[in-house]
Every structure is written in structure tokens, then in C-alpha cells.
Length: 140
Image (cartoon, rainbow, N blue to C red; front, side):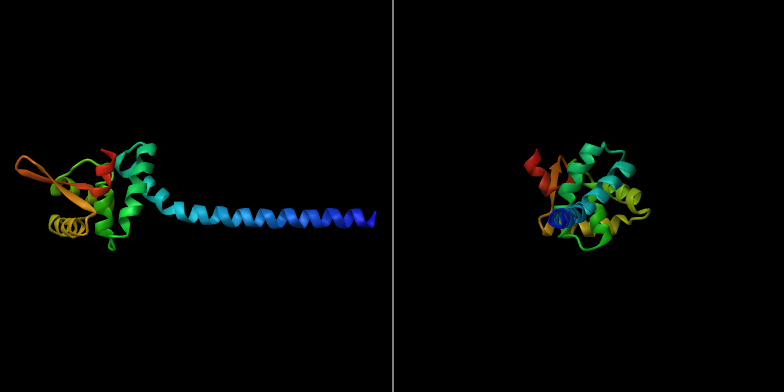
């Protein structure tokens, strides 16, 4: 009988170690997804975007975030998340919805930087210049 109790205790210890390993992997995965989830949540709430589209958009945005170090540039990327080409005025309005405030001049400056970095592309539409995420070219 003493050996039986020791075997069960050893097996229980193995199960606990395996459970802890799985929890660590799950924590790492959730940590990586938390930024996407936060962005998707914001897009859903602020722009009334369906959750599935918001999740897809958040994945594009997270990839583009490495080229945007400031909050305004990140808000510009979020404003372009649905892959629709937008004017500076439209982007500024959406950035205001996200941040509460935005200057058209600052938004234009950030857009120019993002264009220079290849994250945003200008799209000529007649005499107007609109902007779209470069990552969206693959999805069109």
C-alpha cells in the first residue's frame, strides 16, 4: 500500500507540472493577443465595426504599429483599419473619435511619415488624394 500512495503522489505531481507548463503557454499566447484584443475592442466600440471585421483589422494594425511610435500615428492606423481609402479630413474626424482631439495639420504630418515608411499608401481618386493601409493591398 505505501508504494501505491507514492505512485499516485508522483503521478499527481507530474500532472501539476504539466498543468503549469500549459498555463505558462496560455499566458504567453494571451499576452500576445491582448494588444489585438484591445484594438479590436476599440474599433468595435468607436466605429461600430462588427467584431469579426474588427479582429481582422486589429491584426493588420498590430503589424503596422511597429512603424508608429506615437499615439496619434497609431490612431491614424486605426482610422485606416477597415482598408477603405480616406481623405485627410475623414482620417482626422476618425482620429478625433478615437482620441477626443486631433489637429488636421498633425494628422497630415503623421500620414506623411507613415507614407515615407511604406505603411500607408496614397491613392489618387480624380483630383483627390486618399490614403489606405499598405497592408490592405494584399486583401483587395
